[in-house]
Amino acid sequence: MRSVVVDKLSSVASGLDLGREIRVGEEIPSEEGVLVAVEVLNDKSSYNRLELASGRMARVRSGDIVVGALGHRKALFGYAGHVPESVKRGDVLQLLNIGGVLGVCDSVNATMGPPFDVRVLGVVLEFPYLGERVGIPARVGGEALPHEDSGSLDLGGVPVVTLAGTTMNSGKTAAASAIIGRLRHEGYVVDAFKATGVSLRRDILAMEDAGARNTAIFTDFGVVSTASHNAPGLVRAMLRRMAAAGPDLILFELGDGILGAYGVEAILADEGIRSAITCLLLCASDPVAAWGGAVLLKKEYGIELAAVTGPATDNQVGIDILRQRVGVPGYNAITHSAELGQFVARRLNLSRS
Image (cartoon, rainbow, N blue to C red):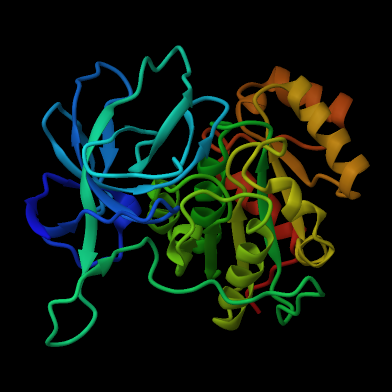
């Protein structure tokens, strides 16, 4: 065990009471969610920032000591990587996302260049036993994921709005924020969560900024990257928790696209979750993606779209095509945020009374 002074505590480690000076050990469990301290070995001119535990973004430089978490990533527009079979001090890994996920990079997106290489310094230790200097490996998340069956979901009548996307960066968080902001101004209480993806808190921070009362993300349950085996259970747990707090509605965002590796398809295939969804909005990159997404959702899951938002609605041309070819209205979250929120309120039959 030795001391290490940390320059940057990444957001994947949010919720842990770690100071600038931490203790690290050399016996490192090679498991998702284990926190490790690393030294950055190179500089980058793009994709060179890290989301800190505070929510701020900071530039990463060669020589920085960073705390991140072992995990996998399978992003279409980003780096893909996995947790190695073993990890020891001195090993070189890669920084797979701006939330601080660390692993062996398998695939590089050419627009981002090579990832940051990092040298492992040791596993971060925490000391849970009062009065004892016995350190154990620190892990992501403050609570265990409760067991969830696959039956029906009783949310006490609380309506649920779901935002799905045709791909990454299709405007889901912008739409979520627009809806939350508008409904908050109308006097409604909205609770919101991020259901799938790889650890990064900026989306739920944006929801909080828009006025969501309670927020959550899968990282809170110790999950660095979602997958088909854990995503439905995560959604069920967060829906139950938020419904128990009595909001006027729950909104949740499905990170990545409806075709992807983060478990979105497993969530939509869960009959109990599907039955709980009152209104599903599709964030589409273009009209063809919107048409294909509508067909896929209807054919595979029996889900009828309520509306489309995202870049496909950036002007009237796209909105007209959506009405004519997809058969649903389009609302742009940037230019017509109030209309988007009002549409959702009408769809849910919300009433201040």
